[in-house]
Amino acid sequence: MIDITRKAITLRTATATAHLRCSPTSLDLLGGGPALNSRLASAQAAGFLAAKQTSLLIPHCHPVPIDGLSFEFLLQSEAPTGIEIRARGLSIFRTGIEMEVLSAASIAALCLYEALLETDPQLEISEIRLLEKTGGRSQSRHRLPEQIATAVLVVSDRCSRGETVDRSGPLIAGRLQELGAEVQEQRLVPDDPERITAAVTEWAERGVDFVFVTGGTGIGPRDNTVPALAQILDLEMPGVSEAMRVHGQMRTPMAMFSRAIAGTIGRTVVVSLPGSTGGVRDGLDAILPALFHAHDMLLGAAHAPEKGSAP
Image (cartoon, rainbow, N blue to C red; front, side):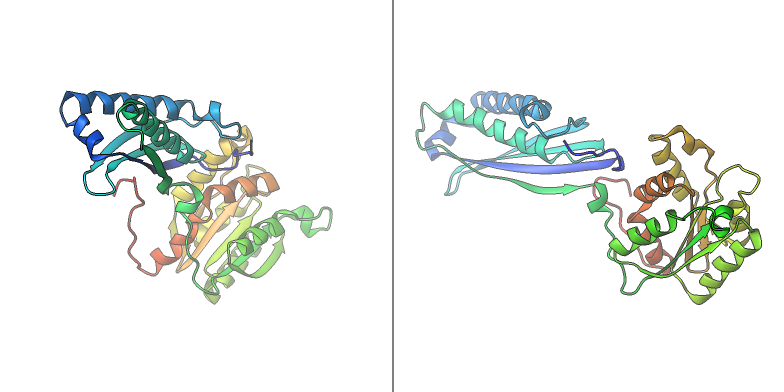
């Protein structure tokens, strides 16, 4: 089973369908009265059980908490006659609920197949497929404007003195490039408030879209990044730093010591990250790629809520 610990916990939805082709006579036998209701109720119950057992039947499938599961049975009286079974599931988790709804729709179709088999030897189950899914990183995938500009500032006394090699800066730059962003510059400065504010202000005045600052977010005597940035931010974005801390706290108790902040200077988004590679990795996992939507918001673009979310 793949490691999903770095994935963010988000609302996931999925809808699957399965078609049971049957004769018009079979549909007539179901009628629409008690016989129909009884068979569909049994099929729905079978689908519920199948969804709950999915991870036991498919070896590499992670157990997923099912926060909601519903069925829709659509009778098709015109050729080709049959029943379409739709299963829709919801889960707030690290991975999707696609396999659960596919299992649910499939087993519900098999349950109806068994109920009609004696009277209709021409039954056929077909078109088992996923109709849609939402949530996770793919849902928050933001299409980057061409040549979106970013910059990375590493704040470290030890790296500035050459006592250790910086690994956090290249890690940030690599992630940004993977997502299609242009990294215009990487710079290394000591834990000096004036050097920090000078670099960030310069990039903001130049029109850099996103500035990432790593290091100096703890509680040590030389951790000056947070107060330095607080002086020059026009607006703070506490939700960004909260998202990073919540995500990090679920992975290490050391995340509680981070004072990282985020905000804007004009149309430039500034995000501070811990100095460790682990802290950087967790922080970026928490906010990317959704953070890039801030670029559109700063330009005044409207945004619609994600499917399944409150407006």
